[in-house]
Length: 283
Image (tube, rainbow, N blue to C red; front, side, top):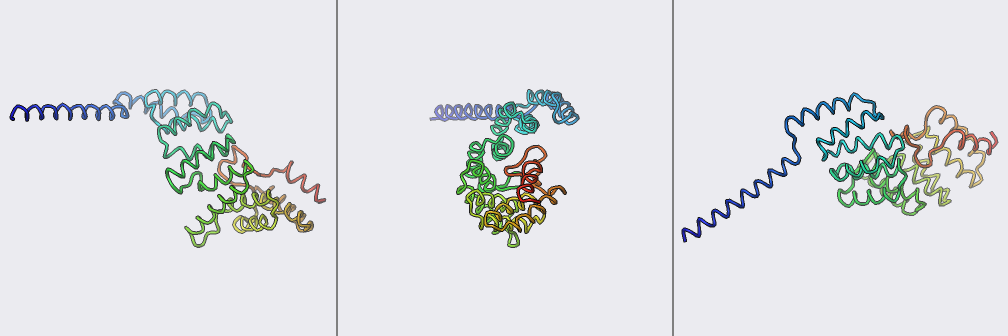
């Protein structure tokens, strides 16, 4: 009996030692030696001192990733300037690695990049649906998942799905804040979806809701003016196009942070949109 007990204790000890070795291996996998930590600090300093779009910065990030290949942040930092330079094919595997190492943080961000930068709307929808299923109702880049889903469906001409998503985004925002109308960009793109369905009454209603919050929003005025021409309110439409032209020249257009890198869907410009509209409406 005593021999069997000693044997059992010996087996238990071996088992605990084995578990301890495995655990230690896991810790070491995601930890750095003092020497590597010091090297990484030098590379990080060099990264921070390099121009965002330089090859030099990319090479320093490569060096950091040689030491810490599980760093989702540095994979994202490698992809981000490439996307902003429209080098989407180069950027793609790096952002995929960021998602691999920190899915919770970068899955929805990749959905945003797919939507605004790469114009891969089906991929954006897949990312946001997965993020919504895994993490619930969240925001990325100042907007809810429903906003980005609505915009992606809009770009695929799936207008009914787009309307459903924007309505959901507005409803959630209104319920979370009693004084909220819902973000003016939700109303703007909801108006665009109705405009594409040729429902001018609903489109005008949505553009007016957007303009309640952003009174000089030239893009909303432009599309509202076209809705007015469709219902034979041409004098009112002409006056609104002139307003839109004035507002646009003052810089009142879509004001999302990343608009300096990429045009947003349905964003107007002077030459193609406003100048032609003014000519057509007979300024």
